[in-house]
Image (cartoon, rainbow, N blue to C red; front, side, top):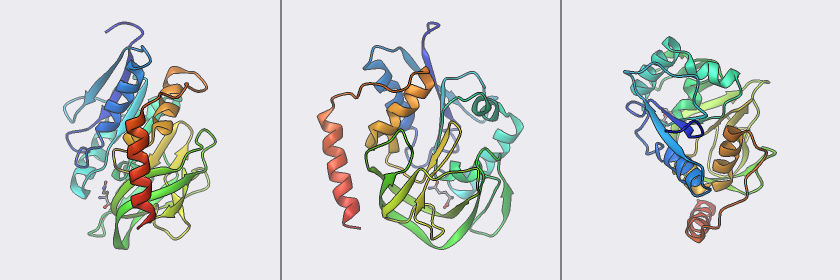
Length: 240
Ligand code: GLN
């Protein structure tokens, strides 16, 4: 590893790895390497303290119990909180949104304190939200529709310090009846989109990479297979 290697933290894939969201770290690495930037994925497991010195962090979704183990670990080793306070980009998927909020209530009705990187709280909805999700971003760095697959029972209500990532066109999103999807607070972005989200949404991947590299934006990559995947998934979402 050289000094200039971009270090991508995959946080707790051993407990927050159920839905394939580890792919987001691989997409970041691949898109960096395609631009001639050396990059590596650093796996941070329950056996490791969470470092605060990485360039970008990703966290995936999980079931309620695994989510609780992750919450305990992130509370005990506050490296992610320090990195976020220093403006490092963080991507939190589904259960990770909930863990990064003030608290979440499990399907069994227990309330668990989160790590408060997001001004939001999460309670179970009546019905599990499952299926393709299509949204229009409200984040200023994003112009393209977002596509993902949602699978969650929790519904997240944003407080005034948290802004939505997008408005729902098809699907459920944050699930509290206000058509919002995802959350943005400082350099931390959360979304209910599995997929993995960054494989389907290259603009979001490049926004995280640009923030990690301290540049305003990156020239897009020409990848026809990604365009095809997006066309397919957006069409599937519109049928929902
Ligand atoms: N257990 C959480 C919920 O159902 C998160 C699920 C997930 O990460 N897909 O809301």
